[in-house]
Length: 241
Image (cartoon, rainbow, N blue to C red; front, side):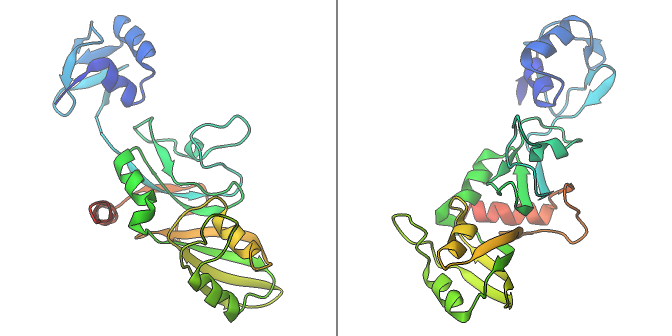
């Protein structure tokens, strides 16, 4: 499949379309060893050898990463006040990556990062019922009554209650520890569910999303590419009704 040279360069992070046009005119780009002259030159992104400033650029259409979001950064690609999750991805090849879904600034844990918009849409679709599991510390005694209420769905002040959620009490006390699995992603949903039963989340961490599980050897701020098995499983979700 043919692609314009300037599009190839910009997608592989060499610069904006206007910047790479200047680089081409300055003789900084070669195509199969020959200095390129036209930004509109059509190339085969898989077969043509493109070098920028002497370094070969290999093309990838999509990238998929599992990221351990630390508290204090925002689930966005740009922010003027805070560090974003994208600031941590320093050696990726695509420049159009984005986080799939959001975690609050003070929430940590698993985020899926990609530039595959179709897959992201399917994972976030309420119709797919993709499970997301969280670990939380909650002010107040979380009881069996809460477990049963969450199982039915909780009124968080919207038109309809939340979908049924699985609440597991790990320890009960003045500060309770729980795991909560939900299949939707309403704004501040976990915090609002506990507020609805008179309790407050003081620590929140996402442990999993679908088949993606936060690795124990991944530290906050670190990331790794998805394995082939993980990606195949996500694509199976994409193709289910």
